[in-house]
Image 1 (cartoon, rainbow over the protein chains, first blue to last red):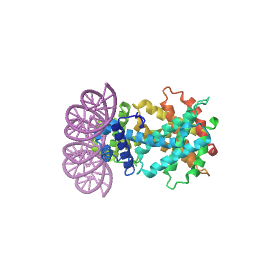
Image 2: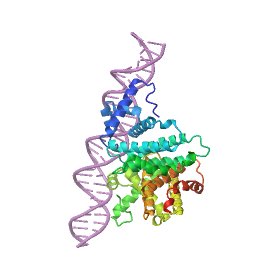
Image 3: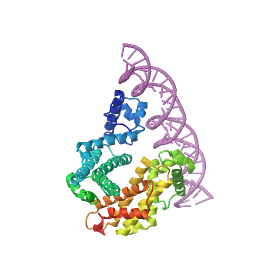
Image 4: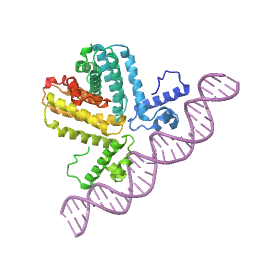
Length: 188
Length: 188
DNA sequence: TCGTATAAACAACAAGCGTTGCATATCCTT
DNA sequence: AAGGATATGCAACGCTTGTTGTTTATACGA
């Protein structure tokens, strides 16, 4: 829906979207997503409320966009988007998702129902696309294995990020990896 | 939060909640969850809007409660809640979740973002609790396997229910089962 | 540099939300 | 059957939402 932010865009648009994003992410550190109103966002961004609606359908679309951006950055940072399937890459992927969710839980105030649900949908979409890309040359169908692996990765990462006392991440991923990898070994 | 509806309750409460539930479920067959307002629900239920808020925090809480009720019924119907872990029961569980989501997609108009997210959270909670119950006597930790299995089951069922042309359910479950069972075999 | 296109600001709108205080109806207990 | 307790009806509140029409400011091509 929203194009790559680096594209050539009217500088006014770029500025406004930047302000909205920044304002929103700052607000997430202060209060529940549920209790953030569009008014809050536009106040802090110092733009008019009507202008917000010229860029995003509602605050859920904004959350979606924001999460997508943040998660994609993490994927890019580890160049996971330009490789193929092997156990090491899978391990790194699990690690990224765990770290990402853990950071959300640390940085954002009370990630509650709606917030978590939206994050889940968004992140799983990206993980699934990535896995499908990794397995793109397989002779056999990757649909179900990729589906299961995606769900498992997210489920494990979510579980990890909700722990009161989180174990060392590397240790946790060692435990988690085989549970995910077992259905993908045929593609290694 | 809300107690068992069969409990001894003030008949007025029972009646009101029944009317709300029924009105809501009828509305879901007519329009998007997103576009159903509390007003809509109370109009059709013929109760006052303020009364609604005496029973549910908001329409999301109502959805949550409704889904919980419906799904629990399916579980009860197949007496999956009074058994232990084996492959047959697991197969039935997968089947129930697939059927349940497929029915939601058939009966409800346009199950969109918010709706789906809420269903996911609610159903996964119940599946996880059920699996944990099945594995309750295990010597080793069931946390991660149950987490992975729960996610996998839901992911597969969601995948199934989104297919344009759904394959025969039994056939699909045959394909899906081993992907879930493999991490639970140690408990059989 | 001028003119047009387009974004942003502003103001107002109907609608929904969640809450309140109070009156009325229904309940349960004794 | 009478009492107090509690659920519901009703009306109004301040607030947020998403939208619209108009004006002002900024960008960009000719």
